[in-house]
Amino acid sequence: MAGDSTSTSDVRFEDIDLTDLGVFADRCPHDWFSFLRENAPVWRHPANERSNNEPFWCVTSYEHIQQVHRSGTLFSHQTGPGRNGAGGITLNDQQPEQGPGLQMAMTDPPAHTRYRKLVNRGFTPRVVYRLTDAFRLRTTAILDQVTPLGSCDFVTKIAAELPLIAIAEIVGVPQEDRHLLFEWTNRAVGGSGDTDDAHAALFEMGVYAHGLTERKRREPADDLWTKLTDAVVTMEDGSRVELTETERDLFFILLIVAGNETTRNSLSKGMLAFFDNPGQWQRWQAHPELADTMVDEVLRYTSPVNFFRRTATADTELGGQRISAGERVLLWYPSGNRDKAEFGPTADEFDIGRTPNHHMAFGAGGAHFCLGANLAKLEIKIVFEELAKRIPDIRLAGDVTRLRTNLVDSIGRVPVEFTPSPAVLGSPSSDVPRPLNDLAGAVCPVGVL
Image 1 (tube, rainbow, N blue to C red):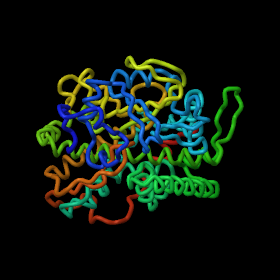
Image 2: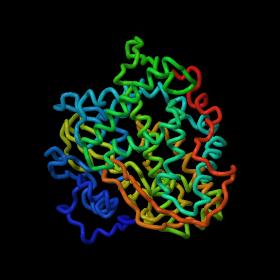
Image 3: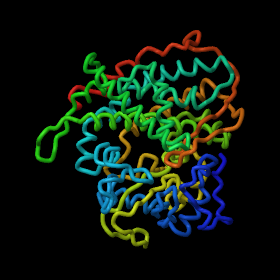
Image 4: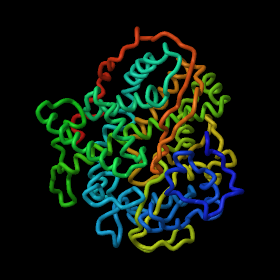
């Protein structure tokens, strides 16, 4: 893939600008990350207008990213001194009413733990494993839409579909609305490069969530959102407090964005990695028993989340650098996932049999390890299993486009072609397949709240 070159011979500190969305629209700058790991694994990025004229720290080594993850509230997901409650996980501050302290991803323990308890039992390995047959049927139906055609856009027609269908069903969004979720998440992560449009998408998702809450109160169903309409959070003093409308709306945004954006990009970038490494695609077709290591390697190599930000809550030292309370710290996961100190001399190579593989695509330990990790791994496994069987000669058929965002490594379009083959379940239809077997009950067991 473009940008996977890690030559650092021409890189200079003054060339590096990780706020430049144009760079990320062209490539993932692995050459910059490699240079920083070698020369300044904890580096103070100069201020510019895109960082609100405030410098920030970039952490690029596996060791130091892991250290931050395991430092508890020393590096906050929420806020820090001097920020008046603003903060969060994006580069520039989000105001308190936008999520810090209210949305699960932007809270610290113990509040984070209380929010997480509302949904975590629905994403355990045992519960997710029960979805295997249903996901495989869904994937068969998805591929039935494209196999007779001989070509398609891999992103919208294949990679996006299973994560969208699954998260819509889990949450309780009508399947006919799932493409709204696709549009909103692309805009919300900054795919258009327009900050105002990203904020508008978040607002539209919040409005939709509010309407969905009202609908579930009128017409309750066996889904996550029905249960969250009356969810309560147990406070430290033992009191039980209902989620506010704002908390609930922010919960919806988190579940939808996290539930489809990252998995879609893992699938899209994973397919590109196979295109760039045809020997690994042949190996995958010949050795389906490598499924588990294949999935972990796709996640390591594609690393769909570029960074999450933390805020130092006290003066501290990291990698020999003095970080002051209130300063912003960005953890660059694609860099950690290519660190030779952890993954050896082949860290830049795509190897579906790699083991051990302690990647940080889902985080690097600590309380915020990705809630949906098991779900994402199952989706990636099944899609690539079915692709190898149904479309073995899939190949790139045009230019790849990328979105203008640095928060996630997001792919916009991957044109592919292949030998046409008939649908397995009969004539392809534009109708949404019937609901996943027992999906809502599986991910929302009685008593989860």
